[in-house]
Image 1 (spheres, rainbow, N blue to C red):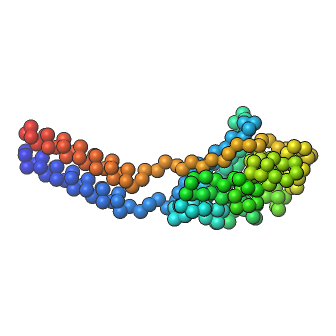
Image 2 (image 1 turned 90 degrees about the vertical axis):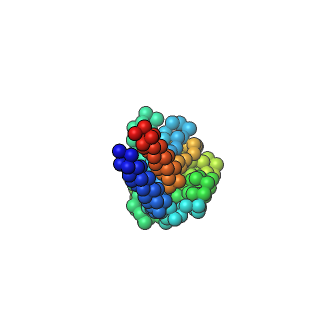
Image 3 (image 1 turned 60 degrees about the vertical axis):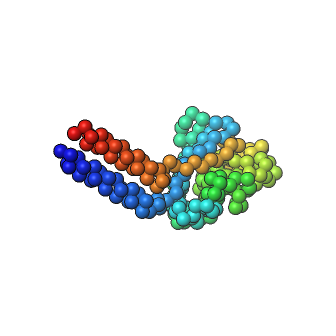
Length: 216
């Protein structure tokens, strides 16, 4: 009986060591993935996600580095207004899509105009005559909020909101302004965490077998 228990203990220890080695040698996930969320001053919301190759972690991630980007807009009652699911490496927006993410700080840049490297523009594509939801940072022009303020518009004509949000034109319905677009990294176990769990499990199994061996 004693020799059998010893063999079982050795087998468990070997399996644990092999599992640890696999965990340590396993390659990192190919994509870094984040959730998106936003709430405007009037209660409209946005939720979505984006991902990119983790080789870009630590730097500025723009549309050219993205693998996937999806965002949905909802009214205060939770009814969906529109969903945009962009195709990459080139989104279907012919240059209207603007997104800049500082992966070192985890912040989406949104202090500048919709067409600059520190702002964003998501939603409709005026160049193609698309109508509907547009989500962008203000450029501070006359009639618009200060630079960087987030605006959610419903464009009723291809010309969009030419006259701004304080004096609403007939071709635009401003739904909400304000708030912050937030990126939250999705929870994925790190290799070190997996290693710790395997080590604890292996030690527990070995201890239990030693107690059984001693009682035999």
